[in-house]
Length: 529
Image (cartoon, rainbow, N blue to C red; front, side):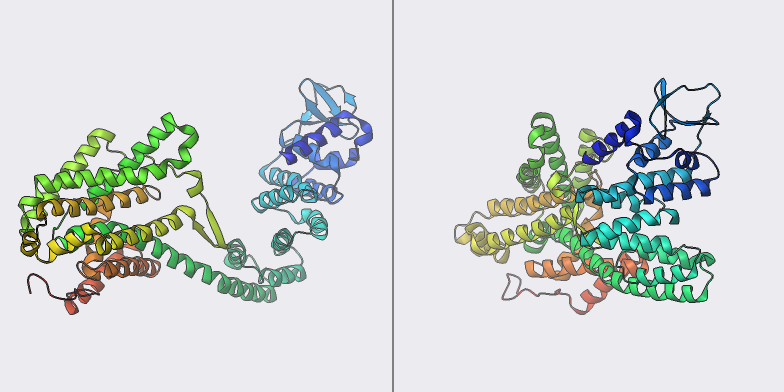
């Protein structure tokens, strides 16, 4: 807003009185008429003087509000016209010619308006001007103003950006000595935009001087060596992010399959129910509590758990309890349930994906390098996954329910003889696994699309995580989930997404052949021993 007020103030100064005008008639005509090269050069010369009237005149040119007569350059404002150099009212003749600006001239005008803000006293205005200039094609004629701003800039970050911007201008200079110096300066950068600029200069014979080409190659190697660590860290973070999602999905499966031995092919659909529960809570907040919309996720977490847990309890009570010890029938039954759940969601919400919006505190990210930004929603999911993991571990190891679940899964008859209601524990355990799947769906809704087929993308991977980690082993689930996530992303960068999936599957098959019990084998005696 301060920059806008400054610009409006300059406009008032230009059109309000002759005493405030330093723009001469010759400068105004040179910028408004002639070939583009001459106009850009005149614009750069005027900008180098930091003339306060220039911003308003450049904006008028951008707004197509400038007309030419043989004697005057006129700025038209409504039905009135003023002399561009004096601000005095003038008559607009019928034969006044419109000033036409091509794309190159418009870019130069936009850069000039932004460049003048580089001398503002407010650091925020200068930072905005630097960001705007970084997106605008610059001309070497605008170099004097950048030099002036660079000499006056006190902020180290902005000074570094201006230095790189200056080198980026000079690397395309007509003077080989300037291009050589610019290439050497760009070699000190750690920004991906500089790497792209260097590659562009080296491609298609853009640079013909051998010494400059050699300096450009050296600079490209230097920049690439700095950027490679950001790229590697990005791959690792993406892998951990994917692994945390697989961990969330597989945690519920580690209970229903790992502890209870139920091959639940509807596990992905339980995750989908959690995602749709999040969508419903979001819409309720948007309709009835718009001021508290940023807090809808806090309610969506327990709602998604309860919704999936209730569906899981219904599944266990109505179908699965009759199929314990019969894995093939359980697989077919739960596959049929998954189809029913998907069609029910299509009937209620439609076949298309539904939008789930991140709250403001999960939007954006933290920049840890010039080519690496860690999104807040991904960071939150990683933390959430380990929070859920800790809760499940405490529940299984430290609570009465966890004791009963472990007792029933290890020796059902003995647990029944000790007075444990095994049927009720089965329902509780299956509901817990289903509820954790719902939490995974809530988390996934913050990073991807929510649709009826959501669960199908993760069911196979989650089974692989449980089997690879060791059936019934939470520690194995953690190691396998994160390991598969990182391995998958590393292989994707080398072989592509499809081949990476195939290679990961081959690795798992070979590993299971050599170690059927998984990474972490079950310790102690079991009921089958």
